Length: 382
Ligand SMILES: [Mg+2]
Image (tube, rainbow, N blue to C red):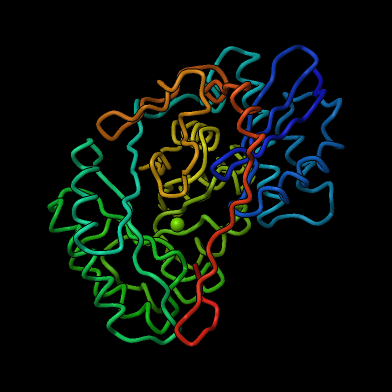
């Protein structure tokens, strides 16, 4: 079997789909994208295609190593996202060629179903309480909320009070048994994070995510040491080499590799195994489309330390189209009672509606994240 073509389509709301075709008629799909830089990753995929055309797609590990090591410069969001989508498509091809789901090729499922969580929006406490109650009524056992808007490096304690009030409102709305994850999106700096993380402790977060920027993870021992709930991070780390130092530092409890940013299923598996050796959990990051979600679920199926899976259905980013729109049959990704069964179809376990992809790619997208400013006019973290 030989790779004959790589085709890409930018599609709403902010994704990029890749199809790898072969001379035997089997094709595989992947999602090589990083949010806000889809066109840059698309260019990288087509540059990497020089290493792929004519190659046997079943030699996934060798291709991965070639793409990673073959260009001399390596790592980072663009190259690792390009490799990620290619890797997903190669696993899809291999599974389809053999008629089995990817997790069968990785050793077989260690669980029957995967716990899922969703996002709730809302900036005012009243909206948060209402939205939290709604997702619990749908059967979810956990949800994630934004922790705070922009926060200056040293800011008023009122900002902390407001963040704590929002979490308090959510906890009051859903009771003690629902998992509340709080994402600070790297918006908080060390001087404020120390007080903020401690004041959240009474509300028993499921986890707190990116309490500081990935650049500042070295501060975690000072700001998160001794906290009675888990700290999560990893959506902006791109390989096992990026994850190793934070595991060694010992103050992260949950890794959140993104299967479209961290080199795909091949590298995601290695990150999960590395985490296992530190007794650290994984909860793959996934605010993206159906192929990233399917790839994440294939890893979740075989990773004993995977405990919950993010997904983006209904998230505020998903304007124009949503996760299930691009599937021939949405059933494999339809969440019931807060869980998804382990995917049973061949390859990634979802079938993409190619005609619909081509149609929506005519609109495409130029999604960018907002640029925020502090009160004094300086640029703020989003
Ligand atoms: Mg996040």
